[in-house]
Each structure stands twice: as structure tokens, then as C-alpha cells.
Image (tube, rainbow, N blue to C red; front, top):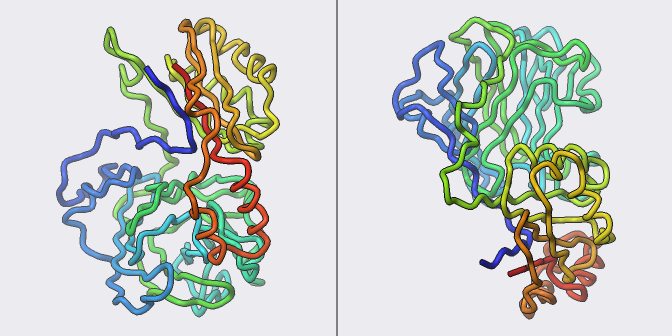
Length: 360
């Protein structure tokens, strides 16, 4: 068989979901997985008309649901985008106690106690794309620095580009991070900002919870979820995100050992990763317990590399994936769409090729 890693991301695993239909209060029916079956029959919280056709985000219909642990939102963004890598920032303003006299006035909404930023940027006017998300507590002085952790267990899906997203926000709050608990009624407002200007927003709307709050309880892994049928081959892919691999190799080893892959594809290894470093990674106790690992470290790429590994099976490099070039003109076509500071990196990418690895 041919195993290859070239910066691709795998499709999400299929999650068990309830049948489409009307939500019944008290039932935890929302799986934040980028599939929207469970939202069928739910009345819209907000209907916002199309009014920002040239912006990356043109907010549309918003739905909301809850269970004892979470507030869930599903919202349309008008265009196909990645909600965690926007040219601006999509913000959810939350008045956690439905009291306009607490918190602060943020972007025209009184009483804001919490701001969730999708595609957070440290410097809003910098022109760079945002990244991931951030939770900001709000006091009478306004939004504060982002929380250093994620005590509200925020999840946003899908993680790929789409025109509709869903998210969850924990109701319990966090005293350590000064993030408020959500009361029986909250007020919510979504807005999209590019540079320092709000280019689209929905009017603040009140939401009344249908369930009593409780500390969220993490669902146990369904019995047999990781079991495999005899005679099958398990392939896993992991994007180790460059520097994260250097900082968190022990965590990655434990995660992969729990999945028990037969074939492993590693994307975005730091460019300086050596064969001896990978040998030490696969010699970590959790992975060594699965068997003897072989790997091929890709030669193509520069800032990042890729690797293919198997356990108990021999590997030999696939020559046609040894040096993978970008298609002619593809790098040049991006030059005008990125900040000037990033253009040098693009030119470097054109010289060093696509991070890739392949093996038989």
C-alpha cells in the first residue's frame, strides 16, 4: 500500500447523533461536530438579512439551544470561510446576567460581561488573519486580556471552511479566569469586525435557558468505540503544528497510543526534525508498547516536513514523493492576497516545495 502525508486533514469521525426533529428541553441532543441534523425544527433566535456582500462574513440566521452544561449556537456566515482563520474577527458578546448595568458597553451593547472572539488577533488593526479563538472577561473598564486557558470548554465546528457553524459555551463560568457563569436569561450579540471596523452585526437578543444549570459532565467513550474488526487496518493522521511537536511530544505519544494506529501520517513536523529525534519519539513508552515502529521522514519541504510510519511492517521511500513542487504559478497567485510581511515566506515556500512524505 502507499501511505502519504502532504498537509491534508482527515475527515471528522462520525459522531452518534439524535434523529432530526424538534429539540426537547433537558435532552443533550447537540453534538458540536459540524453536522446540523439536530437543529431541524428549532425556531430561529435571530434572522439577519444579507447586508455585507463584500465582507468575508455576512451574518444570517442564528439558532440557540441549551442543556444543563452548555449554551449552543448555530449561525450562518453568508460565505464559505474558516471561522478560526478569518481576515477579521467574529465576536459573540454575552450579557451573562441579563443586566445592562453590570459589565460594560461593548460595540453598542450594554451590560456585556464576556466576549468570545473567533479568529482572535492580538493587534486588531495589523491586517494579519486571526487565529483560533479567545475568551475575554469584561469589567466596568471594558474587555480585558484573553483568558490564558479555556475553562468554558469552547468548541467550534466544523474546523474546515463552511458557511454555517455551531459552537458551545460552558454555563458554569470560572472564578480563576474571571469568566462569569451564565444566568437564567442572557443577552447575545454576534458581530464581525475587519481591522477596527464592525462591518456586520445582529441586534442584541435575549435567550432564556430551558434547563437548570449543572457542571458539565464529560460523556464517557461509548463501549467498543475504539474496537476494530479483525483483518482491518487503522490509519491515523495528526497535524503536530510545528513547535507544538517540540513542546508536547509526550502528550502526542499518549494520544496516538490510545488510538493504536497501524499506519501513521504526521503533518507539519518542524523543519529541523531529524531521524534520530523521530526515533526517540517512537521509542516513548506508550508507542513502544504497541510494537516496533518504522518510519520515512520526508525530504520535501523546509519550514515543515512530513513523515509516514508503520508498526511491525517494513517501509521503503516512494521516490516520486521525494521532491514535491508547487504547481506552476500557484504561489505567485497568492502574492497580492497576503500581507507584505508574509510574501517572503511565500517565496521561500516556492523554493523548498511542499512538505510531503510517501512510502511503500
